[in-house]
Length: 230
Image (cartoon, rainbow, N blue to C red; front, side, top):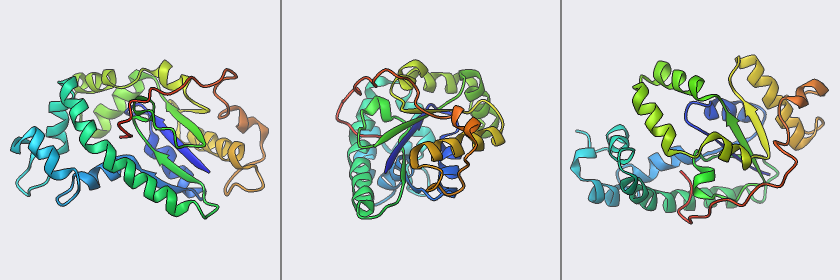
């Protein structure tokens, strides 16, 4: 089974992914793969520098992702150019990982922050981690030291909450405590695999109210731009 895990900035995708790994899932992280493909020697390293210039390269010869983000989040054309350079090799890396896992019975969780925006459709089920904008902004300001204006600008460049939730098979709401998050992940694990198969799962029916099908209506088709995930 392949779980596509997504959510806006500051919603806690990494926390949910870690909890799924604790329960036995294999992690594939699109953002980590983006780091790899833009690292020195990676397939996107030269093309990204050629497009955006030496100003995004630090003293060690490494692409400074914060400097790059300052450029692309201020310019939609630049952002699309970056996606066109980075998404294809990331998509290829994800496909190779999924191919390697295809002969196993592993649950693979693929964290794709822009799953909806990119139209990534290789998942058996889509899980959206959701949080209110104010909670997400506070986390990013307090935990990452980002400026509030910068956070809100980046959030505005992503799919809005309603659009993202409309594509969800399951929703985890991460506005509360870690214990609450664990309960929801337990319920999700059971919902996907069954209480007899899920490591760390629970048979408590109340938990299954916290995570489950997001809506009875069918999911609308993704916006297939063909430029892969990020």
